[in-house]
Length: 105
Image (cartoon, rainbow, N blue to C red; front, side):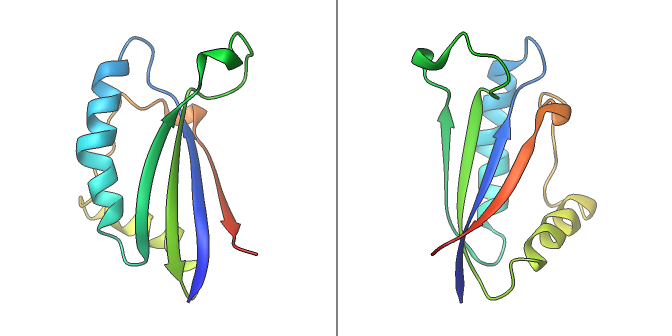
């Protein structure tokens, strides 16, 4: 099994921070944790000491993954969304989402 970290930077839709955070913590994190190979999920908020820099999304999620083939994970997410097992709220500004996979050295 390979070890990876899935890094996701996000931002809420303007004025919908509370709804976004409630969905992320209560719905989305549990949905992702149900996918095969997900070991853990943690969320972070950009620290005030970084502001007023622009361009940094205010939220970060880190997912620790243990998978043989990381290329299958994005497809598992897409399937879960398409099948209704991973609803996405419009309180998430998807245009600001940035993702990356990192492989453990």
